[in-house]
Amino acid sequence: MAVNPMYHQTSQRMEEELDWIRRAQRDPECFGPLYKKYHEQIFRYIYQRMDDEETAFDVTSQVFLKALNNLHRYEYRGVPFSSWLYRIAKSELYQSFRDRKAQRTVNIDSFQLHGLIEEMEEDDKELNRKKLFDCIKLMKEKDVQLIEMRFFEKRSFREIGEVLGITENNAKVRAFRSIEKLKELFHTTKTNYEDQKN
Amino acid sequence: MKIKKINLDRKPISSEYIQKKQDFQQLMTIYRKQTIPVWKQPLFYGVIGLASITTVVVTYLIPINPTPIEKKITSKNEIIPTISSADNELFTVVSTESVGRDEKIQNNEPSQKRKSEASEVQIIDLDQPIEGLTYEGSVSEKRVDRKTGFLPSVSGFSQGDIPLDMLCNSEGIIVGDGTEIKSFKVFYSVGMSEKTQIVSGNKIPDGVCVDLKKSGFDQMLFITEIAGVKESKSVNVPSMNLWIIIG
Image (cartoon, rainbow over all chains, first blue to last red; front, side, top):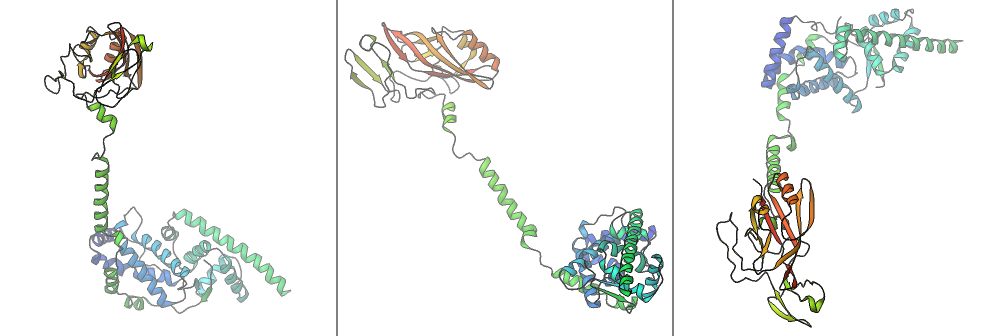
């Protein structure tokens, strides 16, 4: 299931959204429609990366509070309002990790994991899963992000680009490089595991 | 950010459950309750801004103590010691026979007579009122009729404003008591620099007039170290400064 079914909008929806934004900038009480529209997807983005549900709701509230406080600074320049919200969400998420309110977690389901192992051109075995988890823990945050968004959240490259503030092409290249790094790490780890087995 | 944990097949949360957790009113309550730091409030900047502007106005626009130099320059009408190397210079008559050369005697005491070895020396204090000296005309006309006086003048001007042509087309520096001017020093501005000339005789040199005209702006002309001869005796004549009007 795609995490963000409402991401792709028609131009009419975008116009409607811009109207909401302008009204909310004049009167914060008019922020309601935007809150309602984006609350779920921001929550899922945050909850995907942490373990505790209540903390995820708290951080989500923080995101919208910060958005309200800084709404006067938002200016539409072809980037959807959601991208701006995601940047705030990322900032608040990492702040919660630094404040030790939450710990960085990767949540995967079996179906998504299977897809990733296939991408790695490996067999979906228990050993490979275990090694894959270990490799993910060893990877840098920026690479984990790309793998999460592409394989676990099933986002398009365009969405990934807008969330990270990069072009769609750049998102493709980065995602490709992250998978290559994971493969390299996996094969190195595989060698170690085989040595131990032997 | 180090990965602490990986969860496999965590129980998903439904959209309905997430929507139930939405609470826009609570968000607005928290938003309204936020306290703005004092330094971020508009009133703070209003007060600070006003104080800053007041400070700037007081510092730069209201003069507190005019400089002594400005006072001297603006005091064109006063008979004051000239801006020269010898301030408070007194007029002395020194006998060349007894002394051998000219002497300057500086003394702040009122008019007094002092006897030298060979002759009587009269010291006149310029700070004291001088008999027979009057101002004529308005502030802009500072021409003084003092042909009988002992102060030097040019075209009748001893101090104050004098048109350039009157300076340059005059008989030169004249002292009313018959003192013959032998030499003097003239000091004036040329562009960004200053010029000093030692002149023989009593006439303002043409070169000085040309320089003054070229400068194109009104300025002070200092005439100092005026040496003269009266009744075969060398005398030092008081300095004078004139405000030259070019236009």
